[in-house]
Amino acid sequence: MAFLRPGRNGLKRAKSHPKLRANDYEFGKCTTRMSRVRNAVRSLVSGYAGVNVLYTLASVPLALHYLSKDEFGLWALVTQITSYLMLIDMGMTGSVSRFLIDHKDQPETGEYGSVIKTGGLVFLVQGVCIALGGYLLSFWLPQLLDVPGEFAKPFRFLVAAQCGIEGAFFVGRILPSLLQAHQRFDVIGYSGIFQMALGFGVQWVAFHRNWKLYSLLAAYFASMSCGVLVNLVMVLRLRLFPPAQYWGHPSAKAFRAVFAYGNDLFLMTIGNQLLNASQVIIVSRTLGMNTAAAWTVATKSFQVAFQFVQRIFDFSASALAEMIVRGERANLRRRFRHVLLLTASAVILAGAFTVVCNRDFLLVWTKGTVSWPWWNDALLSLLLIFNCVSRCYIGLASYAKQIKTMRWVYFLEGISFVLAASLVAPQFGIPGIILMAILANLVWSGSYGVRWAKGYFDVSVSEILGVWFGPAFSYFLLMLVLITGLCSLNFPILPIARLAIKAAATAAIGTSLLWFTGLCKELRAEAKGRLRSFR
Image (tube, rainbow, N blue to C red; front, side, top):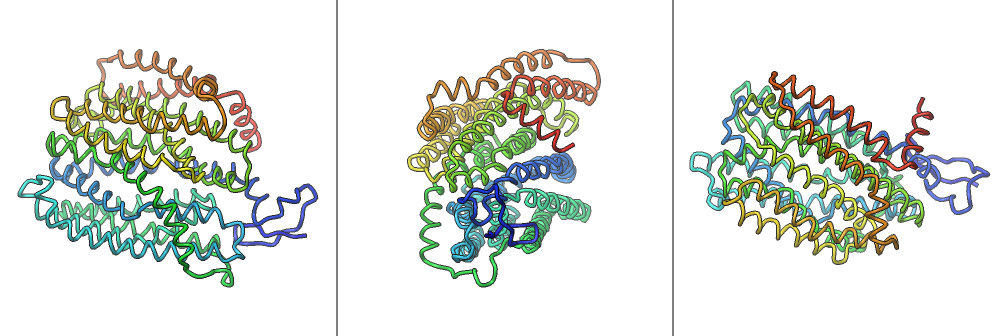
C-alpha cells in the first residue's frame, strides 16, 4: 500500500511502512507529523535572523536624517491610514489559510484547488477596492485629520499612491496563505529579508536623489514587488499548487464557506486594527504631529519585541490547526500549553530588555533627538506581556473555528480603547493612552481568553494560571528584581557603553533564569533532546 506525501519537490509516492497505523495512510499525515517540529524550528530561524532589527536600526535614522520630525510623523500617519483600508480584506486572508489546511491532505478532491482559485479572485477584487478607496479618501482626509496646510497636498498623493500599490499587489496574498498552510513560514521569513534589503537600498538611493517623502513610497513599491516575486518562485519550486487535474474551479460553495468564516474574523480584525493601528492617529490629533513622530520612533523597540515573541505562536499555529483537523486532542493540549508558557516567558525577557535598555538605546540611536521617560517603557512592557499572552488564546480559538462571541469581545476591546484613550490623552498624555490599552486587554480579550481555554480544554482557571503559567510567574518576579537593580544603576559613562553593559547583563542573567525558571521540566528535557539530535 502506498500513500501520497508532500516532499521537497512536490507530491511524491511513498512506500508503506509497517510501523504506520492504518489511519495514518492519508495524504501527508505521517510525514507532516514527523516534520512539525522541524518546520517550526526552521521558521523560527528565519524569523529570528535579525534582519528586521537591523532594518529598523538603519531605516529610522536614515529617514530622520533627510526628513523633519513633522514629515516623519506624516509618513507614519499615512501608513496607519492605509492599514485601515486593509480592513476591506474582511478576514479573508486568515480564512483562506485555514481552509487550505482543511483540504491540503486530499488535493485529489479538487477542494484544495478550488479554495486557491476562489481566494485569488476575492483578493483581486479587494485589491481594486483598496486602490479606489484610497484615491477617494485622499480628497477629504486632510481636513478630517487636521493635517497642516503645507502637508495637505503631499498627504493626498501619498495616501492615494500607497493604497494603489497595496491594491495592485493584494492578489499576491494567496501565496503566503499557501506557504502558511504547509508550515513553510521559513520561506515567508526569507522573503521578508529580501524585501527589507531591497526596500532599504531603494530608500537610500531615493533620499540621496532628494525625493524626500516620496523616497519611502518608492521603497515600499520595490519591497512589495520583491515579496510577491520571491513567494511565487518558492511556491512553484515547492510545488504547493495542486496537480493540473486536481485544480477544481472557483465555486460559490467555496466562497460561502470561506466568507462565512472570514466574516467571523472580520470584527476581530477591526478590533485588532483599533488596538494596534490607532495610536499614531490619536496622538497626532490630541498631542501634535511632533509627539506622533516621537511615539513612532520610541516604540520601535517594543514593536520589534512583539514581532519577536508573537512568532512563537504564529509559526506553531498551522501545526496546531493540523492537530485540530486530525483530532489529535491530547497532543494539541500539550503543545498549546508549551507554546503558551514559552510565549509568556519569552515576552517577560523581551519586556525586561526594553525597560532596561530603551532610554539609552534612544539616546544612541537618535543622538538625543527623541527623549522618552522610563515609566512609558514600564507601562509598554506590561502591555506587551498581556497582548502576547492573550493573543495565543484568541489565535487558537480562531483556528479551532470557535469564534462565536469572541469576535464581539475583540471588537469591543478596540472600540473601548479608542474612546478611552482619546478622552484621557489631552490630560494624561502617552501614559494615559498605554494605561487604557492595558485596562482594555484585561477587561476584554485577556479574561475571555482564559475562560475560553477553560471550556475548550476542560481545565480549571486555577490550573491555567497556577500550573500552566506557574514557571512564568516565578520568572516574572525574579526579572522584576533584576530590572529594578539595573535601572537604578546610572553609570557616568557614554550612553553606548552603558547600553552595552545593561544589555549584556540582561541577556546573561535573564536567559539563564529563563532556562532554569521560566520553562517547565518537560520543555527543558525536549530542548536538550533536540540539541543532542542536532549535534
